[in-house]
Amino acid sequence: MQTEQKSIRRFVFAYILLIAIIGIFLIVNICIGSVNISIPEVMDILSGKGADSINHDIVMQIRFPRSVATIILGGALALSGYLLQTFFHNPIAGPFVLGISSGAKLVVAITMVICLSRRGAASSFLMILSAFVGSIISMFFVLALSRVINQMHMLIVGGVMIGYICTAITDFIVTFADDSNIVNLHNWSKGSFSGITWENVAVMFIVVAISTVVVFFMSKPMSAYQMGESYARNMGVNIEAFRVLLVLLSSILSACVTAFAGPISFVGIAVPHLIKNLFGTAKPIIMIPSCFLGGAGFCLLCDLIARVAFAPTELSISTVTAVFGAPVVIYIMVHRKR
Image 1 (cartoon, one colour):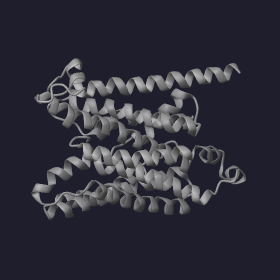
Image 2: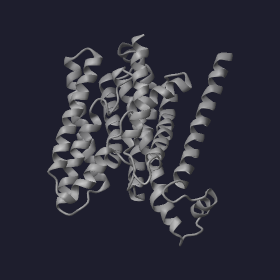
Image 3: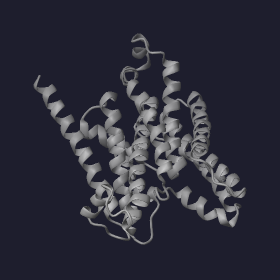
Image 4: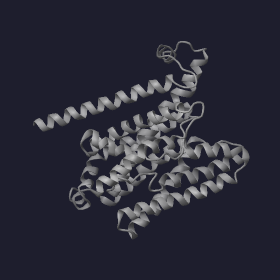
């Protein structure tokens, strides 16, 4: 009884901590930039005052939609990583490591080149669809490798190789794109939350919200699946349908991120591991919402550093996430070896 009460107190504290982190970094991201805006002025702008000021446009058209998108996409990426780790029973499985993000990047790059060459912009739904197709293709190759390669570490290496192939083809496409397209493709291919509009936010919110709700309702079969496939079958879980749904949801979430922000590294690996240590449990009903909150807070911090650290030069978001995420991956591998 005391152990259960301690666990509940730990969960409540961890959730409050994550929500507080998101709230603090959300405010800081909106206030700090090339033009610093005070918190009272930001509150006035958000409440509808000062509608004619320049700062109003900075907050409402640039920083606020970017921060909201960072929360949505960061949470989606962490959740996608958690689903893949559950699927492969491996803590270093993730959309970036397995080449899923790179496959999505390749197809989106082709779509962008075709649309831009015709002097038209790709719609949000077309970008997500392209990224989803790329994710599914890469995931298909990873699953095909998993039937041939039994060792999980070799499967991870195979996923990395698939990612390198997709990245090489993407770089080839960018190199021979029209001069006017190269800048857009290059910036996007490095990963960035810049240029997000409220229309983009609305689309990504719908896609991510529906996917997250479906994932949450899968928490019970996921708990059984974590105990092994035989146990899950005995509990009445349709393993084949469950695995297909897990792959599709993970691909949709990672595709949505890649479509709007480009490939972002290490979030899908590092955040679920950090959340497990924070909450002291791997139960899906706890991990699903907490991974989303953790990914949102992590990406808000990284986006702030990317914008401010070397202002006015903005770093790619993957550069910052790699600095914080790579040591976590190294720790995971060393810890598992011990």
